[in-house]
Image (cartoon, rainbow, N blue to C red; front, side, top):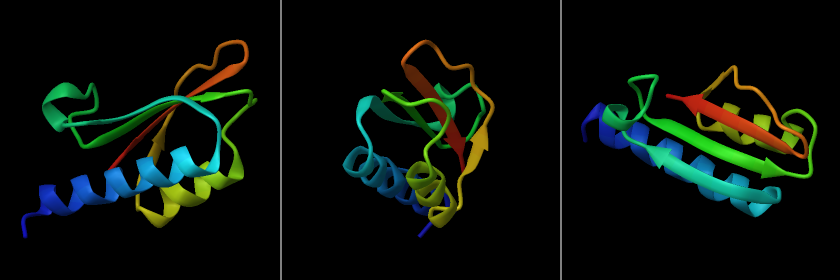
Length: 83
């Protein structure tokens, strides 16, 4: 199995887990060609939270993803993480 297939699986698994753990507005998996980071990317907007919740950080760590700095907006937390 190629590295990118494995990376995509990790990002998708983390996306599903985050949707199950915390209230989300949206959760997307972006291919390297569609991501500003040129890597498989999990892009999520979380509802009703300040900062990134520990449950999300745990899922990102379990999937081997790196959290990218993103600005938050009132009532929403944007999360971007890459493989």
